[in-house]
Amino acid sequence: MPTPSIAWLRMPVLNDPGSTAARSAIETKFLRSYPADAERARLMPVFTNRERFVRSAGLRGTDKVYAVVINRQGDVLARAEGAFDAGKAQNLRETLLQQRF
Image (cartoon, rainbow, N blue to C red; front, side, top):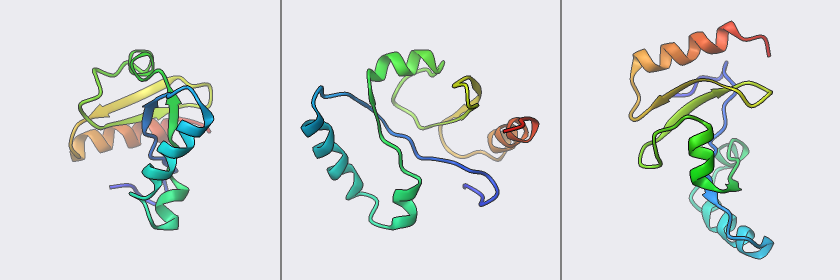
């Protein structure tokens, strides 16, 4: 569960359909799933080549949810996959606390 002391974003990575109109339609449909302003404020859909993104982030696929700690240079500092687990959360927090953003 996210804590207020840690800045986080929900970042769905979607295959780019290739046109502004198609991206806008997908984003509009996606935003309907998040009606609250607070949810939308932390939502950043990314349109790119999804498989390339997965490989470059060192993820194992697209069938699970990932939590990823990324620095301002785009380096992946830590990652966790699957359902919430207190140990995984602690490892991510420790990585965040070691950084000077």
